[in-house]
Image (cartoon, rainbow, N blue to C red; front, side, top):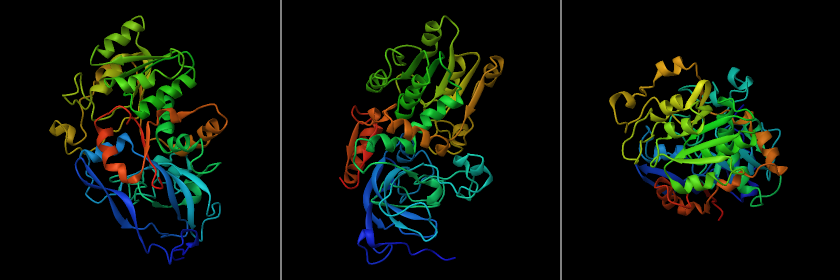
Length: 404
């Protein structure tokens, strides 16, 4: 069966892929540009093409932006994507032009052993290099990113999450969190086994860390210690719950000592790493890739649980040591073993959570859009990347809207 021709009439096109469209393209470390690129088009019968209504800048994008991955110039960024179906491949059965959908950052086939087991973040089909694929991310398959006007969606029947309402409605910014940060924050609490009455330490008050705190409070955590050094992020986290969030600025106190003291010398039931391999010590000057992993080990009570959703990579061109450049970090395994801690980690299987979280949004149980600080046009992406990378106030979570 050859490539599908689809339905191009909704876009007023002469034919598929005939025009250039705007997209956010990586140039070199600390530089992206909005350029004209080849239009998205249907390549396989199971594809659809969507018109992007919202696409978010993620903290994971900053690893590429800063030159801390093997990303090459020309890659189109964007793995948090949402839009309207414009063209439909001949093999697609559940979607039609005009449907509003959100996409997991995972690209998954739906029929391999891992996908059938619900581990869509580790699809065995979508990426020839290793298990797992994503839109617009280095080494995660040949899939263009969605920080663009249009995007091709492979295996669309399986990957698309149908959304109610219309583009730009009161849920637009809530729904965009379903691509990554809300499911990943929720996944962190699953990895850590958060239960009602637990005490939780979360290292990293970026969007994922804040969504982890939001999820932990929703699940009934008694107290959540939110650790960061950027005060405006800590202030945002404090808006969650009624006194459930305890901000900890690690430029002011030793977070491990402080949290142990606040838990009667025991430590927390759960700790979550929402930082990853570009972690820094107090003052932000010195980078120590394993510092947060080790802080989680010391912060957590004996026989407690650790969830790791912060990104760690096997190759880091800008690492502070030769070992770290190859993904080999000095983790205090002896203390981990001595305390009998359970450490779970890995990419989020977004489809495991996104439907349930969508329904919580629709029924008014959760409102994750409080983390979205700004919505700007696609043309403003280079400035937004710079400001987000600098942790400027008002740029905690930026949504790009190509039609704006």
